[in-house]
Length: 252
Image 1 (cartoon, one colour):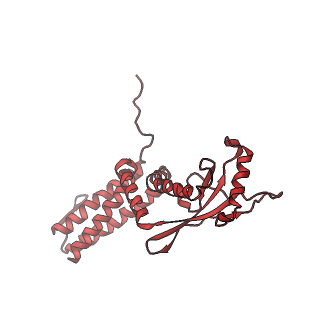
Image 2 (cartoon, helix red, strand yellow):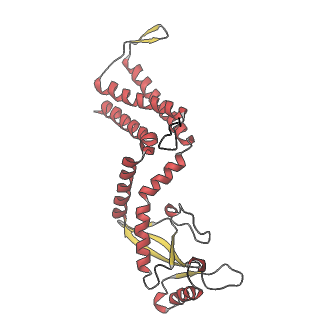
Image 3 (cartoon, one colour):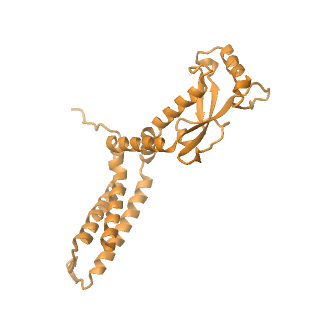
C-alpha cells in the first residue's frame, strides 16, 4: 500500500512549532489576565508553593515571558527553511498585479513601436524577482508630488532569436532616433565595437493611493489564500494585538 503524501511540499520545523505554541499561549494569557483583573495568589513549582503577595510581580513576569517568547519566535522564524519561498509568494500577490499595470502603461507610452517586439525593465528592485540587466541602475520609485510617484524604466528590443528579424531591431532603433522621441534617453552600448544603444530610458508617473490599494488587496488575497500566512506570520499579528490590549488595559 502506497504511503499517503501531503498535498503541500513543506513542513514547519519542530523548533518553530514549539516557539509558536509558546508565543500564542502567552499572547492569549497576557491580555486575559490584565483585562479581567485576574490575580495569582499561589504558584506551585515542582511541589514548592510560592505565595504571591504583590500582584505586580506576576504582571511583570508575564511581560518578561511575552518578550522572551516573541524574541525566540522571531529568531526561529528568521532561520526557517521556507521563509524565502514565503517572501516570493508575497511578492506574487502584492507586486505582480502592480507590475502588470506598470508594464501595460510603459508599453502604451511606447505605442509607436511594435508592442510584441519591445521588452520592458524597471529599475525598482521590487520588480526584479525574475532577475535584471546589470547594465541598468537600481533606483526605487520616488515621490514627486503629494500622492504621486515616479518610476524609472527602460525598453529594449527582443533578441533576434525570439522570432524577430534583424531589420526589426534596426527599425526599433531608427524609430527612437526621430526628433519626436528624444525623451527616450539611450544608454550607449558597452560593446568594444560600438553599435546602437541597447536600452532607452523613460519615466512613469502614477497615483500612490491607487498603488497602495492594489498592494492592500494583494496582501488580503495572500492572507486568505496561503497557509504561509497562518503558519509563519499570523502569530506576529496575534502577539501585536495582545501587546496593544495589555497596554490599553494599563492606560485606560
